[in-house]
Length: 212
Image (cartoon, rainbow, N blue to C red; front, top):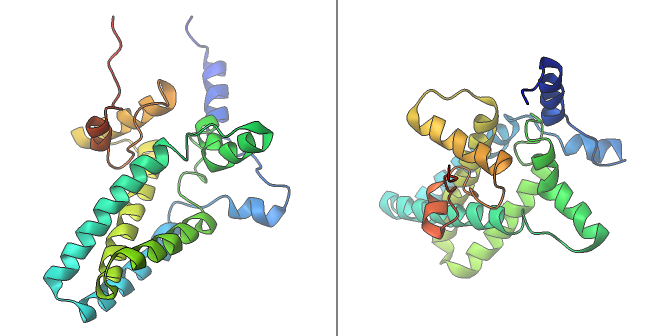
């Protein structure tokens, strides 16, 4: 049955709604974030880390560390989205946690203020990444690798917003938007790579064309 204009408008209102998540007004306000906030927060951090990196190692070594950090982010994005974000945690409390982490985004995928990570969530992730990298890499390579990791996160965040609210014209942009929309509206158990959809082809979670 073809949807009426009124039902389509209601669907649009539902998809773009921004529901209250917390009773505390400040906490609820902090759960919403404009797409530009990560740029203002993390571009200075990336630049500062790049400067320090170039003071510690050669440009070639810094570039190598950057690329390693970006690759680490690629795996973090894919597996983080596939498992922690989509894991069905047990019990009422588990359902609440899942909804706060990612469920709300699938219920209201066009909410413009919940498409990039709140700083309260992204900063701890970066601090944890920094702590782990310190245990893995020699001290002089920690900042180059962290630079690549944070850059990957920033690309992911801004790509996510773009795919939900832009109208791409290039073949790549159209493919990536369709790939992510299929994750939302056809099969949420596939298509976990937001900025890196090729990861789904590597791990066999790409979208499969339905049979006629």
